[in-house]
Image (cartoon, rainbow, N blue to C red):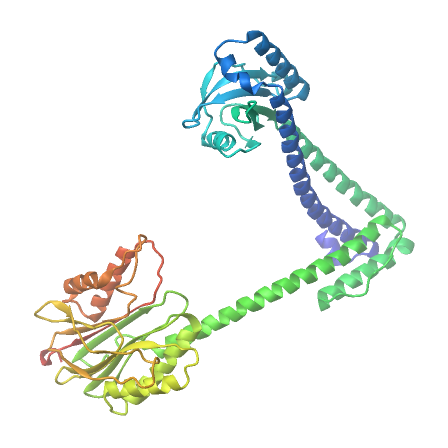
Amino acid sequence: MKNILSKRSSLAVNIIGVILILLLVFALVMSALGYASFTKSFEEEYSDSTFHIASTAAKLVNGDRLDIYLAGWESEEYARTKNVLDAYCKNMGVSLIYVIWVDQSDYGSFVSVFNSVNNDVDNSEYVEWELGHWRKATNAEYREKYRAIYEEGSLCETVYRAKPTDGAHPHITTMVPVNNSDGQVSGILCVQRPMRELKEARESYLVTIGFSTLMLAIVASVFTVLFLKETYIVPIEKISEEATRFARENSKGEDLGQISNIDEIAKLSDSIEQMETEMLQRMEELTAITAERERIGAELALAGTIQDNSVPSVFPAFPDRKDFDIYAFMEPAKEVGGDLYNFFLIDEDHLAFVMGDVSGKGVPAALFMMVTNILISDHVKMGVSPADVLNYVNAEICKHNKADMFVTLWLGVLELSTGKIVAANAGHDDAAVLRRDGVCELFKSRHGLVVGAFPESRYRNFELQLQPGDKLFLYTDGVPEATDKDEKMFTIDRMLRVLNEAKGRDPKGVLDAVYAGVNDFVGEAPQFDDLTMLCIELKGPDKA
């Protein structure tokens, strides 16, 4: 067919090929939809009819007598009921009709009261249970069905066993309650019906559809050849032109109308118009979905770019400097995060560094982070103290903070020649100091309010002294507040223990150790907050 269409040998041959292809596609789609609809309707009718069989059978059983039957009394009445159920089982064409008394303590077993068997309906080999026959429930599904009837007042429960593992044929079992004169459930009547009818009906349906499709293709081809010029060429060309136009313009055209008296071509015309309508609807839906995804993707990509460009990420950051070492790490919880860090040399002897945590997540937090970072960087380079920088940044942000966002900040300036750090804290977690010859501990500092909350907030400087070999560790709350699957936090204490164990490593090794410790603690639990860390090591003259 591909060669025929590509060579375009004749109009008649091409029309035949197009019709065959369209008929095949149309037939497959309609067959699949029809098959699914047919199967669903048949299953619903199958289940409903089985329920009616079971309901009628339940009315034949005296619910007040089940315990008496099990005790061995009323044998004549029992025999009459048994005969009626046997006859009903055969007349209704079902495999089994049985009444059971279920142990309500755990619904794990039952005792047979009536058992009617009809092996002829499905060539089965069921053996009739005697009165009082005890048996365990087949599985947990059956136990839940029993419980629903006894405890929840269910009027019908159904179990489908398309592939039984006990050698039985595929069947459906419908259960209904057997009530006593007080309306209480005294037993359960079950009807087991083979599913052979469903299988045969579906196979017959597929054969019919396949045969119909084949015949339609043959008839269409023969009539196309016989009546090509007068009956087919013009209609097919119009349909082809409309299909070509739609493929080119993706817009609804004029209705083809009564293009031909030939049923197959008229159906093809209708199919094209229906296809156009459905495809336009799908295209509109797809366009809307695609536009939304592209918008979100572009927004996240922009936010990610902004965040990546706002913080230094190339290490070693100062390969020519031997008097200090620095390393930082940031892992957002989502595509973009609200944490920030930065560091840069103000001059040859002063290193500025900052750690912050912006309220919120996503694009707004990324933009807020960038603005905050720019304000800090520009003002620190003017040579003012960290507290003055935070005062300035807070005032500038509060002027244009309609979104009421805020950021916690820890800003410091390290004098590399002396190891003295002048810093200011705006509501951020206390830094940790890793002493070369001592233990790691938090450096408690005066906390100001978060930046962006109140324009009148004022911040104060404090000092911290580092000796050669000492390290300063800054972090956001994503480290101590990382949670495991039981919602337990990593905590400051665990962080300090990890830092003490890793204090002999370089800054990168310290961060790697903390990150590994957090991951080991969290396990498979999802990350709920951004995780950001920074470590500075002051080296002695002997390391220069």
